[in-house]
Image 1 (cartoon, rainbow, N blue to C red):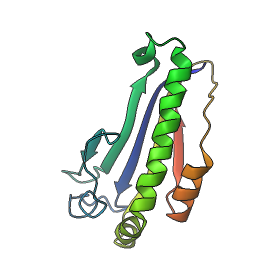
Image 2: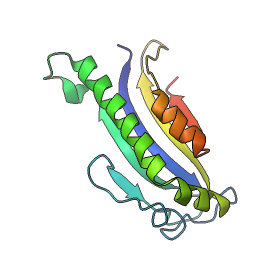
Image 3: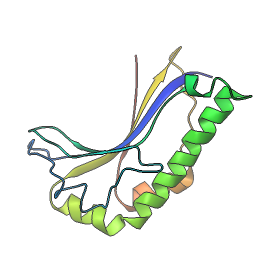
Image 4: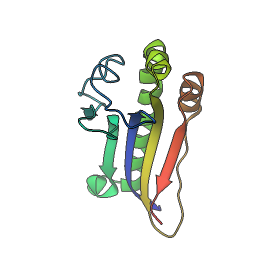
Length: 142
């Protein structure tokens, strides 16, 4: 087990740095915090992105589970499947905000050790993001 922390966030920004207001992103894609949507944030200043955060979890959260790493990766897999459905339900809205000039991508920010990452992206997520033309970016620590 090499992954210790994962954040999964849909990020939206304008290439010219203009503010990603609620009317530009959060409102049109019907992003509301609750359930598997942990946090929704609009930009409040230049160069600040809009964000829909789906997961922000450490392996430590599962320390009391019989198999902590199994429980951790099950939640990651369930969240990725949820995101696929969320994107599918909003495909036309995501297309509209992209046409307005927003650049959107799904960010998986991962903290790991030993320069090793074990993470499977489910086909349902790749299909949903592909059809919605949303790139998936994976970033890890050094």
